[in-house]
Image (cartoon, rainbow, N blue to C red; front, side, top):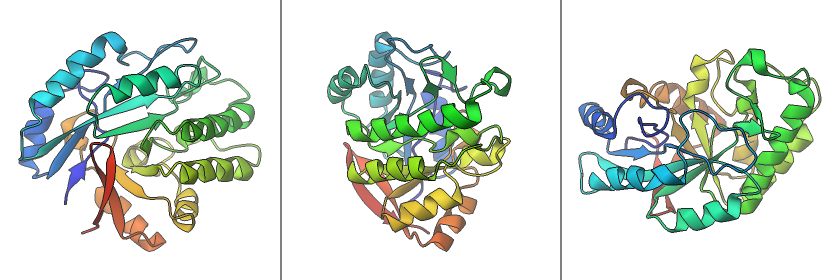
Length: 262
């Protein structure tokens, strides 16, 4: 089965409409296409341009569901949510009011106003120490909330090729334990291959730890244009096979299933 679940349309920061993306998915013979536009319920966080708020969610869901009768490809309703501890319980209620197939939980913002993947020039001097540490703590909080199904682009802090200046191994282990305890799935996001870090999110070392913990995975591309729906999937699957994975997750109405790699 061939599918792509981390996909953004022009409802958030994607470049094309839902229909245009579905048409392209049909051309490349995807069995399933899942939309996961950005949603952010803001309280104190800085707002990221393009994120949907509550006022936009109905229109997004309505349009995706308009194509839900499609079988070529099957269209899945997803969402990528910015995790905020102060709003997560309200987010949970909102999510439960819609027929989502899966929900991705992501962290792009640390300390309410530091967007970790926006511009390397805007990152503070303590980014490679305190901010990275707090990123992993926020991932841990996100998993402990038990609101989300998939962890989005884990270890995004490396996007610009910056490496930690402190030992974060314990912080990463605690985050992975929380992900395991919450029975979440970790996405293997191929967009990292095309950023300065030049590798998938998360790193091979973190994926090996995921395998040891028996944390399920799903390969995604974080596509913002249709042409990126499956870019470098083959490369990701080769890596995962080397690590020992043979199956990846897929979702129906927030219930997880598994399919073998081809």
